[in-house]
Image 1: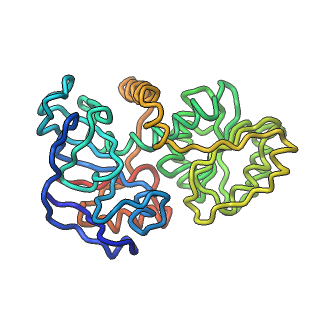
Image 2: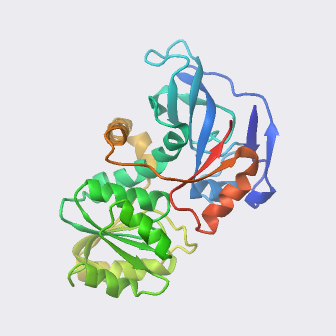
Length: 324
């Protein structure tokens, strides 16, 4: 099989796609011929040794994929060879074959492979953030930073479906237009608008109830200051670079919560809750309530171009690697 193989931590452009032996099938596992895989910011950190998880070498990055089942272990009762499925894995997705545990594999019906490969992590993360962590309520006001990126755009769309009034913050007018297509009631261009002042203005002067922050860096403090009394600040990631240091007196003055969102670990601690969330999301796709957006496609061999698109923050929606 072909795979992006990491033998040492270094800049992503210095890694290579190689031919290697396919992984062995284990009890409770399924072999999938991969057609598409979703690219996520943690993948970029992982191959450079900058992520909190540091796997032993060699390893194959990639945490979400979609394709066709080609082989099953004898103890897998509910799936069949030939089924079109999506899967979540800790490692191994950036390859033409992946072996995944049956608990992480779900049928996708006639959903396009690129859509299925690109929705699990971003929609799974955002739905867990809004449902279990923020406990977002209909009518609440939510500010989404990095709103045109993968998790950001998913948060915008899900917030709208869940009944919130969504304020999208992004860096260009083009990105904000896409956010409005996906349900944002308002937009803030934080390259030329004051984030805190505009968020306060757009929320009627009181401030927002929830901040969804996958960006961090210099955007975190003004976003936190834009919150209303008893607001909830969701720490999702740090795509802008620096991990911010918030003055904790702000949390005291607003009686506000800072709530971490570590979706990957939550899925392992609460697999039942995770599968319930995924079932709801897949139903919403079928019903047309959510429409995962693919920003671009790149071949496996051109993975560096896909990573570039994320690091330059040019992506609007999800970046996909294709194996076929």
